[in-house]
Image (cartoon, rainbow, N blue to C red; front, side, top):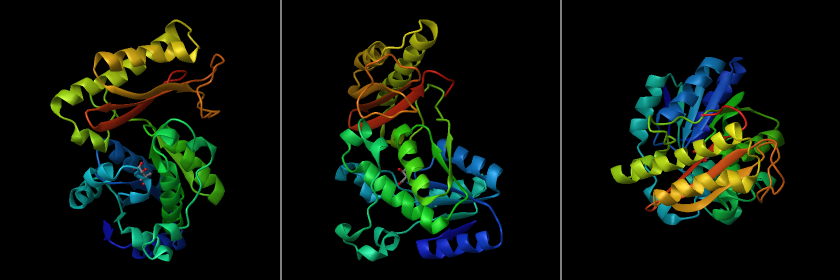
Length: 290
Ligand code: PAF
């Protein structure tokens, strides 16, 4: 596996593969890799043959300095896991290296606007977050020029933003992969490392609530957003998790506010805090998702 600490030399390697006619799968990450990321790497490997992974804790997408500072980092550990998973290139870099035109000044970065799917929910609670995501993802795509790029469905709204970036650039094909869960049902996330054993147990309530909501959709034919979100709120309250939102959306027609009319398609989305650890999750109610 190639390992590069500088995005330009990583980009050169990627160009050489493309010139040689190879297909490149790309998995952008912020490191602290877990089974969820590795499943993306394996899928990329199966579909493209060659896989590049970026590891960069992108400061542009954090709206809380404390969250950025304590985001878990272990580049050597990540590189070992990636080598075992069959990754061909792992690279990282500094903010200045990714955006050399800025000379380190944020106001000189060529920011990318994330579009309408960034409105509401995560976009409302984390101002600037998706602008930071769109900006780094576009830059990473320009450096790697992948054929396909892989993202986890856990960050549902992010997948919409990333699809928009890819539409604007004209590449790559975006592949959204199912959320990987721990046996308890808790969605795998790098932030889970920050949970105490007791918080981890309480956090399972998020998935329990989502499953109850899906049962309402499937078994009772419930289509009203307010009724579908009720069991999620109930489970979070019982587990003493601090609710940020539990709302429904039509996954194919994103709206910043929750639809009032009965839904034809639905994804339930949740953000909650266990202590100071922020967790998000979602579940498609109208089709099987994990
Ligand atoms: O999902 C993430 O880990 C990040 O938002 C991403 C896509 C790597 C951009 O920094």
